Amino acid sequence: NAGVMQNPRHLVRRRGQEARLRCSPMKGHSHVYWYRQLPEEGLKFMVYLQKENIIDESGMPKERFSAEFPKEGPSILRIQQVVRGDSAAYFCASSPGQGQQPQHFGDGTRLSIL
Amino acid sequence: DAKTTQPNSMESNEEEPVHLPCNHSTISGTDYIHWYRQLPSQGPEYVIHGLTSNVNNRMASLAIAEDRKSSTLILHRATLRDAAVYYCILANAGKSTFGDGTTLTVKP
Image (cartoon, rainbow over all chains, first blue to last red; front, side):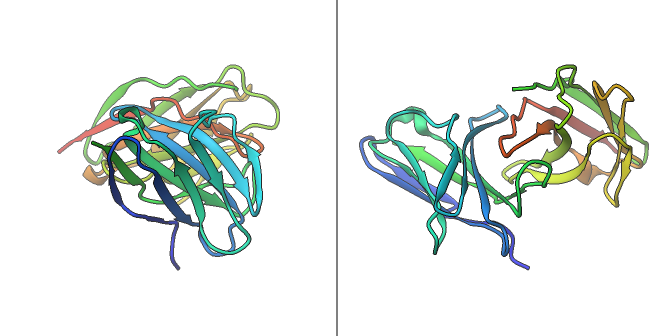
């Protein structure tokens, strides 16, 4: 029973490049969440998506960041023109429904900006 | 967003019970109380959740105050593998706000 799969596990980019982070939810899960975690800090909510819809993006920076969860394929978190401050661990979680349903997390993508 | 307050750190001896407290005085009637834990270099792992009644599962127990303004995660016999950061969060309509959690150290 595959869990939430994130890839790549580690991603290195130079300033100004684009970063694409992928998340495949657990089988049967149609809700996806993205979080960012800086070193020694807790997780910060970024965005909540259902298939083809963004439900809540209140935690996403207004510029350079976007997320999608297409009808087919994984959810993608895209960061354009990366800066050093984007260096962090990005975690994806999925659930079968919203609200009280527990979220199942992947092991994250560690993004390093040179 | 309703917030939770947890102690920054706690220590326990191996094989002894651990009670991890969480305050959530602004909880709303539809908020569920969820607990997760995170080991170094891993994603958070679901532990337990509840609404009003106390809950038990194979990992832990959750005791919820009658007024729901606080809760306690109980690990009945701590092991070295239980050393992690424990997060208490309120979940409602998708968005979950994680605080800084409690770092649990388990001493052999």
